[in-house]
Figure 1 (cartoon, rainbow, N blue to C red):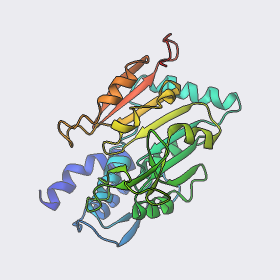
Figure 2: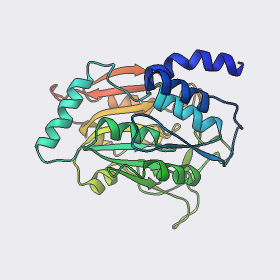
Figure 3: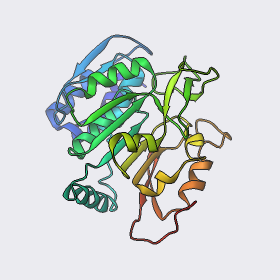
Figure 4: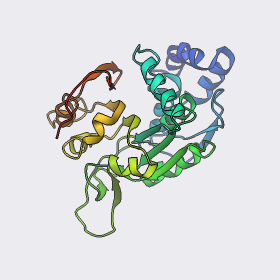
Length: 281
């Protein structure tokens, strides 16, 4: 695809997201030839963000900007179910509770920024296991006091993880249980540990972009699922054919009264707290 064609085809999305003049300006800056991987970091002014967004000169970072800031990958306003989620958010605030959002697989922090702009009173725990991604994530989210960065992964048990494919692109790292014992490897957090860290019994949103790790996450210790108002999961079966990465997820969530809506590569599971259902053992 030529550079000119790519810019023209993406122009309506940029204009819709940022307005005519700023959309064109951002398009010309962001949609340019890039190296596959680069350590060069540049800032980009996004009209409705609190501070500039920092991206490496890499295909991965710019693709994440396109998904999160231009296409608004995690915008749930398109769904009628979003109204009840906003009501739950407001109800928590009225009760003196601080709504909790868990963003697992935070990459460079753009999804966490999106949630912070949409739910400004929420506490957001954003996890990213890879060191270079985490460094840029911390830089991007620094102006947002409600976001807490955590270098680590999300898992069904508290243990150590390792990156299975270190040569993969910055948006495609996978983790697995570390072979070594002790303190080596990446810290794994359970959802219950994250809830305890935030002093919360429930999560408003649990967003999961964890490259197949949902297979392990939903296999055990899943009581938190029934206490989550919205679970957003990027499905990876297309990327890992016949690996069954989503089977434990569907087996788990099917025990609760969720309603399911598809948005691009991910599925949004809205918990219907008005429906009666037995909590699985």
